[in-house]
Amino acid sequence: MKSYLALCLIVALGLLLRVYNLGDYAPYVDEKFTLLNAQGVSVGGANQPEILNNTYFTPQDFWKPKKLEDFFGAVARSDFGTHIVYNLLLHQWIKIFGLSDFYVRLLSALINTLTIVLLFSMVRHFLRSNTIALFSALLLAVEPLNVAQSHMARSYTLSFFLVVAASYIFLLLLKEQRNNRKILYLVAYTLLASMSLLNHYLNFLILVSHAVICLLYERRARNWVLMSIAGVVSGGVLLWWLNFGGGQYSLKFLKDKNELHYKIAHMPQDQNPLRGIVDPINFKSVSTKVVDIFYDMNTLSNGLYNSVMGIRNFFITLLLFGLILFIANRIKNARLIHALAAIVPTVVLFFLYTSSKLDLFLVLFSYYILLLFIRWLYDRYHSLESSTLKLVMLAVLMYLLPMGYIIFDALKSGHTTSLSQRYIGMSIPFVIIIYAIGLREAFRKGMLVQLLTVSFLFLQGYHLLRTNVNIVRDTSPKYTYFGKPRIANPYHTTADRIVKEYSEGDTVLIPSQNSSLYSGVVGEERTKGITDAQYINLYLPKDARIIQRIDLNEPDKVYIKHVDGTRTLIFDFEGLTYRY
Image (cartoon, rainbow, N blue to C red):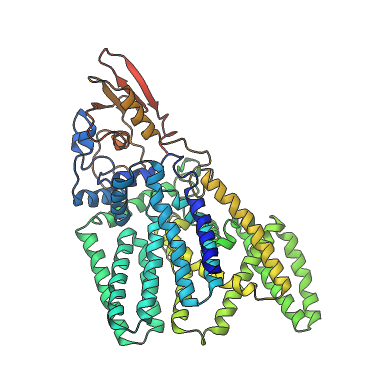
């Protein structure tokens, strides 16, 4: 009972972080893509000739009924053929709750909150520990990437949920003995695996991890047959999608995107518009991003690279940690001379470390938590129950495999685009399991270690609080992409003002602006920028007869031109200032 009460408090905390200020800030460019795609509308108007080719149009033209192929085509042209599961789910969600920013993003927030409960249930079931399960839930509840993605109308939180759910069912399928229940799990797993692949192509990493677990630990022929069926079906779904569904342009889009990013990365640094995100491959750019991701992949060291500030300090932390372990071991074994000999280089390294000494404690203790997990696994590897071992090793694989993949992809492409925590965010729930086990082990140690653990959690909790406060205030460039808070949705505001100011016979003049870096990347020609018109019409009444025209000579301002020739300024986007 106490465990469920604690879980309720953790879920309440997680939900609060995910819904606070949820609808206060305008959608950014990827969210705007999602909003159009969820209505079956292609960004740029590939399936809206009434707007793209006609001089005048109305909301009725924008809201013409769409077919399934429109949804497929929309994601193919702006989201390289991914996110379709989320977009179709969001489409139905919007039908019920409408297009307000709060309710549109609420879907992501609720899915991610449900993932907290799902992770708790999976860990509790297979590790048989309420403590580890609660630690896992708490670490996921306050994990910044999950909080940030819950504030966005994007598919990533659904991917996180799907990979955890698929893994839960995968382990249940391997464990189950009853045939009827096993078939039910097979159907559920195949469905979840297929949905994962369709939602984002990088989710294939979880299925590869499942296959590796089978190769290493599964010896029952019946389970191999069932998993083969699931693999063939889900793989067949992906092949259908790439050849006949909405993924036809995926490989071409990725090829074009890689070529474009390669050119951007190799521009002079002061001319690179994506400097810091898309950089050329070299030791510094790769190592910096990889170490940053390594720290951010688990809640207990999230953000600490900002304190370490550099590869030099990172290697000093590793050497310091090794020396501290050496000294502790020698003292424990009464080899004081060896311990004293190691104190000098330890002190030297301590003073060579140039960043915050308090944060150095956090870094070293996060290493210690990981070390406790490694020792726990080493001591119990051969005695763990089969299903427990499979979950633990799945967590290890999901720590290593996605990181290895994005490094390989970066080296292959010649730029650092793929070196982003967001792309392998589905690993985070599994990495959290590793550190939750380490935390539980720390609290099983003596009083000194317990006090240090509590101090560590208190200080890191303060770091996480500051990070999450910045996220919900929209002042976290790392997680919300903006240092200055966005205003409320300017397209919704513009649509409301148009409805209020418009009279029969007036014409709404909408600026012509293509603000997307990837406009035309899949090949279609655009003679005028209609994206502002698309976003504004999202919020206009579907049956309205509001006559609109794209003003090819105006890049930023929305006007209503009245019958008498006068104009009323409705909104000025000021270039990219309010287009986000």
